[in-house]
Image (cartoon, rainbow, N blue to C red; front, side, top):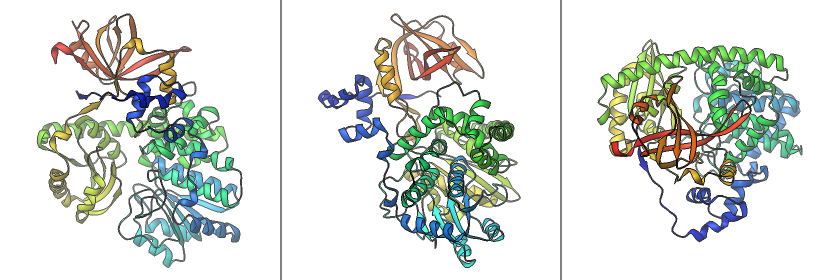
Length: 570
């Protein structure tokens, strides 16, 4: 993919940058975070310290008092409590946090993760019947439940109370739950709206710890799982999420629990820096795989076991299922790509709706993300089976896919999600109507020109500006993710140093030189660019991010290429 670069505007009043001097921040980095609205002493202090003390009081959450009282009552009288969660990483970590914590606090607690293939997403009647068989009188629904109106009514009719601990968008009508913890509920007073499901579980645990007058460390021991689930759910890494992820990554790096240690060991990550990227691309897919291929309860056992040997055994199972998932993923992507390239007028299509018999329902979300990335258009992928379809949608920042689904809900059997991602079930006969109607809807809310792939450049720099102060400062801006992305730099007048090569699966390995400074670079899936660079002298422009690379005990700085241009070739 080639991009249209959007170069940054310079700050006219540079005197405002004096507020960053306290942190000895390199001027380039100071400008970057200033443009990201980290522009007051209070915001800067919170951004750089990321202390647990900057977390909000959990009792600011509507219904938190009710939730804590109901759980304490259940533990006091010995009621059976069921932690019921979604099968993705966010749901699995949220369930693991509350299951392990309530067990340690003396609760009679079990957990239930629905099967993607039998019960499906969210709180279901079948899941509640399982709770009945276990003589459960309190369900805590994690990362789901906010739209489960009829299911929670059914549970109530069976004398089962439900506490909803969710972060998804509610419907106009709310369920008849004993307590609803969801910052997205209308007029909810909680100051931060972007917590993941596992973050909501952590806030509930924080409130319990506070009420029971326990040490804060009891809740803090679960920050590693909060970081894992939050990073994997691709929520905004700002405000509370930034604190939770930063502290959680530190815990993973310093003292990983057996399950996470086993995954890091298996994926060769033990000696490497623990970052959001390493969690998202190595640990999270292995946890996710069991929910996509079999049943995610294995992942809960992995995250809550105290035995390293057991953790290693389960991790090997997850690794095997992840390999299976990857093969399904690749085949589905190739088939979906073929549909787009051969059957769709991509220049005049705003939303891509793709459906096929035989696609594995566990990978359509992953493939929807890849199709979105390749074609820069919101994508809905649907797996068809016996006249019904199960699908996942992924969207860009300028199109709210959940709002679109709300308008088209007459087409769905069920649906749920948020602005960037949603899930659905739909009859096969409605798929064509979905394609037509969602594109008609998008004509009003998504302009074709917005679908041009743009790359926002944070700063135009020269290699000689990269010094120890710069790299040390860059580290302090982490963790990087949505809302706080790794800065994208652009440099001009570069030349190729040495001989570039194609490595792995079409990755470009190259060195760039500017004046007397040489930097290593790699461009993932950019091997096709090697011909364009032949004969280029010092007229190459490159957009990139910077990461540390470790090899044989040596640490070097590496450019991760986003895009390359040869100036005289356009």
